[in-house]
Image 1 (cartoon, rainbow, N blue to C red):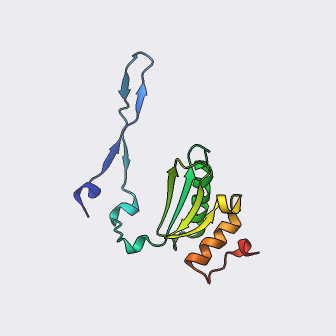
Image 2 (tube, rainbow, N blue to C red):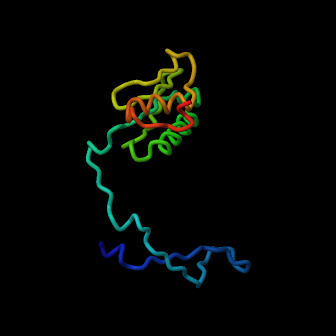
Image 3 (cartoon, rainbow, N blue to C red):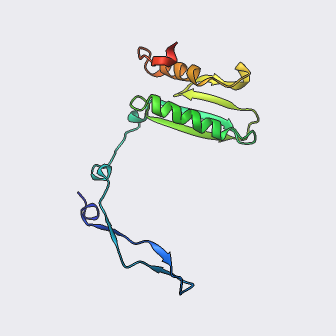
Length: 139
């Protein structure tokens, strides 16, 4: 374990004094302990990042929030199977594509609509772990 992680970390909270206009620090200092994940550094090879799901979305259409929500749902559903989920903004008007590695599993222009979350989970499951049950999303 590194010397940084074994040494105690201290935190002081800035407050504004009612008598002074400048910021001062409280005298009581709280001690923080390092997070358990900090003890073992996470190393990943390029093979460990596979499979990779990527969302290409049009920034002009403001579809970043939709892409982020769908990415978060996939991360929760496939937390141990996915190596990476990426959001890739593009200037190409009307773009909303979902890729698993090099394969495009959804294209909004071809389908003329956005995927339902259930539908997207099934498409990603079929590409990543075909035998896995999705529970209520399979019905």
